[in-house]
Length: 98
Image 1 (cartoon, rainbow, N blue to C red):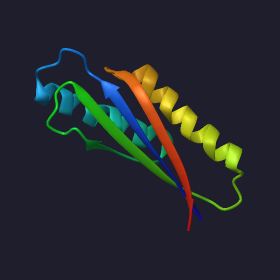
Image 2: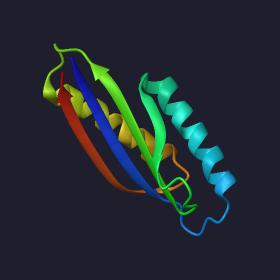
Image 3: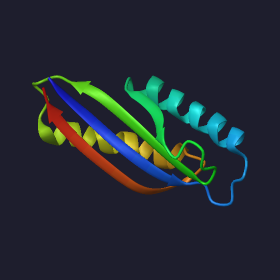
């Protein structure tokens, strides 16, 4: 079994409304969960209204190749980039074998 985890940092430029950020992030994370069957949550910069950090993780079966796992993570990142209210500034991914 493997775990694929990704951290996405986004810039919500000129936002001052923390409640609006949280509401939109909650909707985005819920959409990602439903679309890809992964865990997704805001993981950092919780009190910063201009910065959003989302993490998502998935349990991957052993028979998946490394390239398939990377493609799966990239598809999720692309989905977030196209459906997000904020601009994606960085993406970090890691695959861990258990």
